[in-house]
Length: 258
Image: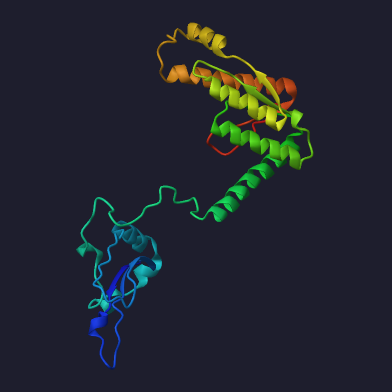
């Protein structure tokens, strides 16, 4: 829970009795941030950004640091208050995806495990509800595509035919040909049943019922389409004796609609 900066004497300061490496190191909380190549005969400088706020938070949260008597090393220890705060990090790489492994093989293993977890959870839900079908809204976008792939794999695990999966594409005011074609192609490749229910007429009727101008593209405009799609999914699931598979950014859910 500290920053450690070390500079060894250079190789030109070596004597008959002692050899110096000129090794330079900057570490933070036990992790090396910057390091030079030892025994270089050239003058070197290493740079690194130390995350002072992170160290402070760790010291506050870890009881072991609070138990440590810093008075015993006051001559050797430097307090964090003496370090200048920096608004920007110049020399430190901050990963934009800190929870995604950089190693491709490790990432593939993790993604496969996550996929299998979703399949296992959905399989248990289908068995518990004894649902005849899985009903899913298919927009052609990323979320619903991933959800349908999970459903298709789950049905394979349960030795159930793909035709028991019902995908509904429900074009609205903002639906493009590309996304709709993607939905059609995906359903065809997976061998699932695909139905199209156009929601524009129903949404226009709802706008008229509540007195909302359909030219006003606000949150009401967006939510009317989302709610209409949800209603269609639930009603068709009821009529088919199935469950609706959620396709949002939250974990896949299966509200029972039997």
